[in-house]
Length: 280
Image (cartoon, rainbow, N blue to C red; front, side, top):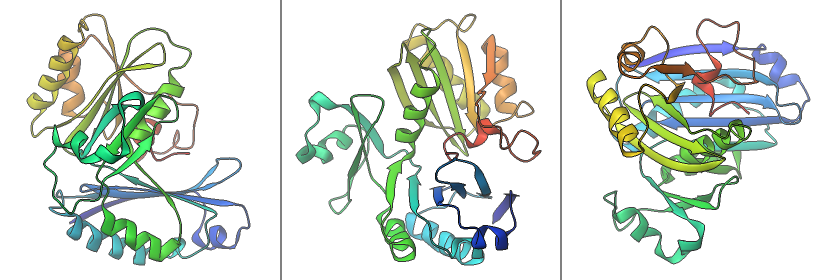
């Protein structure tokens, strides 16, 4: 059920014995699980592992069972970390401008787009680069597991991390930029201009035709001409994929995100644009 790809920058024994200040970042969704150990001060990546599930897991309860197995198999996680960050990746979120935000009305923000249950726990993040809140449903059962494992940690929604990092990445570019972040059968579209967020949405797709339809529909709503605008891919997509090929048929300018982090440049199984959210 689980496909495993692993990049190990140091041996497990070395990482456990080394005395550098360690940071751990864990990202998970119903389609996969990954973790990154880095130097808290220098940001140098010491170890990175990603698991991709062959099938989308049906429930958060079943996902917890898989995560428990994976954590128990990785002895490298049995050590002290000075900072632990947990990233929840799901489509159970919505963005709210801070001036319109009321912490007592969290349910009402999600009710417009998501079917919520009476016992759902709702959280929110403050985007560090924008005056916006991200309201979402975290997987509380998985948070509880990690609290028992690591003690206190910080948790965020993947959209918070994605948008904040893209705003920083685009700060010197004043033109309108369209980013597409692909993960399993979902993808995010983020459009930024002059360090301001123009558009964000998450779509679920089952075919490559679904994929290009949502991209072109969003572009039309934003008056982006497929002959002119630049589309930048992030996430689980490479040039050989059918998603890339169909996009290139309809959008003239298609690129992959270029980052300053070169940790995966020489690795066949990894690319920087694929791990943009997880890297420090």
